[in-house]
Image (cartoon, rainbow, N blue to C red; front, side, top):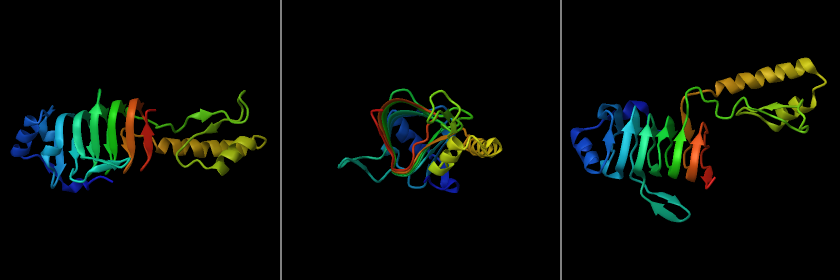
Length: 208
């Protein structure tokens, strides 16, 4: 979860000066908004482009029994929101169009971005049971094993299948968006490139 939008404010001149002294820069500091209690000392060697929202970085992030400071270190963020207590570190290229939720950790990642109109895997058709095709299942976020069973094994009922496919395609369209999410408490570490992928809360993606 991110800080409520109504509580963000623009940086003070003292905070901007502290950020610049720590090697940070922005296309326009007026587009960088922070939560009350934001400490610029938790952000070092960061570059900000577009509209940015930053939470409060006071709680450490603990992974595998090792606690590390939350904040942003050596990263370029483009049109991103970063929740309270999140950690972003050592980003080779950039993170663009993502909401990094509270307590999440994204580090040692080459590139992470969500493109405009991304479907995040929804709407993709996968072949099931028969590699030659004819029993494709349309993926969408709320897909259940029961729905997949009906869609795959009831092809002898064409009108029924058409209705199921219409439901699946409609649900897939609902997932369409311009911003990806790294869920609360999730970890993304040691990954070269992530494009148009949502990461669920408390998930771990390591060296993928």
